[in-house]
Length: 345
Image (cartoon, rainbow, N blue to C red):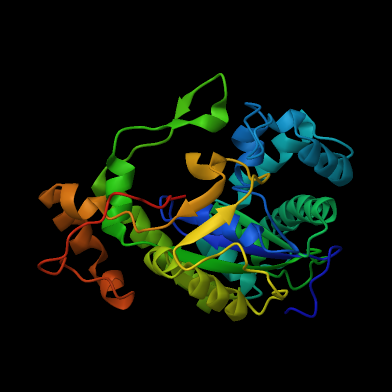
């Protein structure tokens, strides 16, 4: 894989899974590797970032950011309402959770001349323009997209047997976190999204039971994408990332078969990372934190999560807890470490 990536045909590292699992942190760490660039949650560009003129990770509004202005000019001759509305419409047509079975069928060579195949090709063509323009603007060969949704990643990553070719390659990272920590994070009070600028809008908040159901469904989809659709997929646990960031990132990059230049992980220490501002879009509010960031797992849920919620999530996700190495119950004597929490994207 490493021999084929280039600025003109970049490789996309797509971070899939469920929110509040550390994707913003991982995306920024990977985007700081020389020759790599992170774009945040690109799926939000047409549906919220552009319509609401949200802030880029550099602090500028999207429409005022020189980097994204160059990307838009290169990709489409400039951003326009029509272009972004078309991408948003195509997402509803091809990249929602309910369409995963049909997308898997396409990935296996079924219905090659269908309307869905035509729309998937158009979706890939539109995002391919953006990926290539991003790579050229950054002088990068690898683009890191933290959009997370498995259906969106599958639509962009599957190979159409009779398609024109995407103009990029794509591999997925299934970033997972203990679902009880995820559910606790989603159920907490709403947090304002700083990307909104002068029009503050809170991040979503959902119940623990709904979070558990969605987490389990997305894990099933990620497994199918890797085994049925043939999209290269690697799994990384959030807990391992914050406990041993350098080792975790090194193993992930090697597992993806991607190039890592000498000194490529100089920004990753044993217990901290040093991150500059980037042009990532949307995501966790921690996107705007720069400099040295100390890492330790956010395990506040072990102390503060209501017992009923813990039981519900544990029961609903037990097969994955066992498969991924998460203990069904916290060992006796284990104390939560909440004084310095790493971000959850």
